[in-house]
Image (cartoon, rainbow, N blue to C red; front, side, top):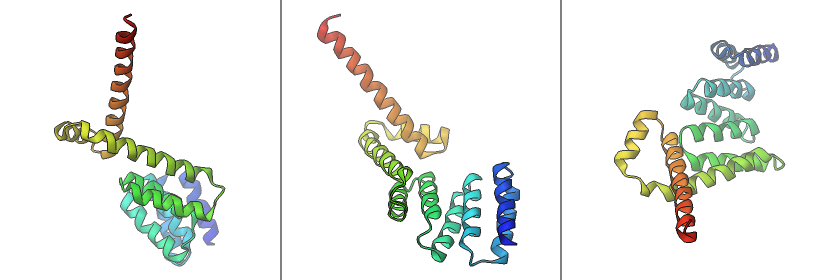
Length: 171
């Protein structure tokens, strides 16, 4: 049955046999393309494999079949974060939170993304484009660049506080 196949695919996921899980979930979709959970499971596996665009395509199918699917909306938040579409990620978490208001994880993700965007927006102009491109090229990821910028900014702030503390108290 489909639920047996879903369980088999989930078992492959837990064993980190992602290709096998993907194949099983694809079979589930082939047998019943109108069952949202088959699409959702395959979207999860695709996310775990790093195929974010394909994962988003499957999430779109889930949401076309069941627009209030909490797992798909939460997963979309993760996918959009990985794709650096931060506002869409926040919007996805907001929609998921409307479905499951007692979910603390959605609130935490919204808060963390908002803090990240605020810090990133204020610190980005402090660093030359050449430096940002060099870091981005090394890590091939704008998120890593943002994290490096934030870390560097915080480190500089701490060093300035220490410097002025010693200067002020003449230690």
